Image (cartoon, rainbow, N blue to C red; front, side, top):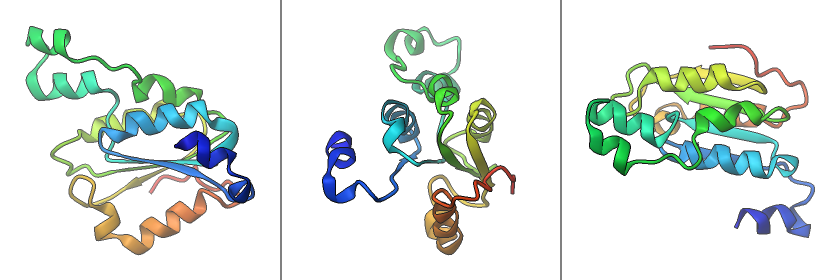
Length: 153
């Protein structure tokens, strides 16, 4: 589907972003990496560093089944550093009870692109519902030419 969007003649002049929420952040980073020439921005909301890290966080390192049963074929923490020509909006709450805040901060640290970290006071994945206007404003900044995303809120 992404390939069809980036190749569609009617969409060539429009900026494009990939948006991943929660576990979807890993796939969003992978897609952004594979389609970098066509993607202007990446939004990660309440994301994790990898599927394996989440399983370990949930079930513990000592649980052998975690290591045997869970794999991370496209871990965000490894791929995010490869996004050099990308604008990144990373959203996470220190009050998130599902995805650890530390994982959001780690993704932000690993990113070497133009980036902005928005710390929200919201439940997991609810920033868009709780702060809709601000959310839309920050998404708009992904496409601004001033590249003023580096400030941390």
